[in-house]
Each structure stands twice: as structure tokens, then as C-alpha cells.
Length: 153
Image 1 (cartoon, rainbow, N blue to C red):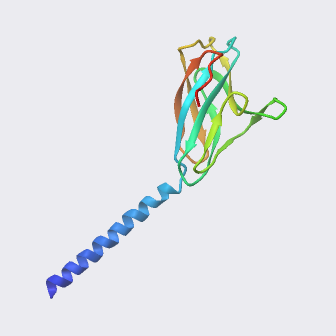
Image 2 (image 1 turned 45 degrees about the vertical axis):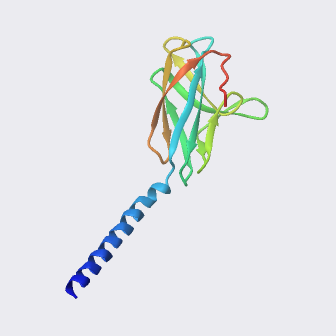
Image 3 (image 1 turned 30 degrees about the vertical axis):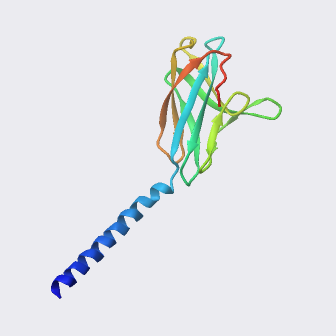
């Protein structure tokens, strides 16, 4: 009887620990889970400014916001949206919805990089540090593409 009781207590204790482990992992599902793909910068005609593009996918259950971008290669990086009148409008943040994505692309949301030390040329890379409201920063290396480049997706 004592062995049976001890076995039951151990089984109950192991079950309780298993429940604790799975509940401890649960918050990870309730946070943004971000991945950046397809980053590139179009080669600018001068060293004054260039446009940058990428996609941020959020497979988490909570939204996040891209709150800023910086680069060692440019003195200033600003975020813009293109309005219905084809005007560029600066924004303070872009939302990345839960289970969704933020797409920066030609004719839409994009980055403006200004103040290069020298004009970026095709084949070089530009380092971008993306800052988010809830997630850790992500650093990406964006290749410089020809002005005629169009991504396949």
C-alpha cells in the first residue's frame, strides 16, 4: 500500500510539473514573432538618398510596430507611406499585425535613406537596424539592387 501511495504521489507530482512547463511556455505564443525577408535598397542616382524595402512577417498572436530604422551607412533613415495622391508622407511607426505582415515596396510603404558617405552601388550591402515596440531589434543586410529591379513576389 505504501508503494502504491508513493507511486501515485510521484505521478501526481510529475503531472503537475508538466502542466507548469506548458503554462510557462504559453506566453511565447502571446508575443509577436517577427522575421524579415526580401530586404533590398535600390541604387540611387546620387549619394543623396535611396529607397529601402523589405517584408516583416509576424507569426505571433500579438501585433507589433516598427518604430524606427537606423543604418551605419546613412546619416538618416525615415519611414514613409505613399498617399493616394502619390505623395510621400513620413510616419512614426508601421504596424505588423498578428498573423500578418508589413510589406515595404515600390509605390507603397518604404524607407528613405539619406546622407551616404558615398553613392551605394549594385552588389554592395546596406546594414539596417530595425527597432520594434515589443520585439528585440533585428539587423538585416540589404543588397543594393539596380534601379530596374522588381522582386518576384
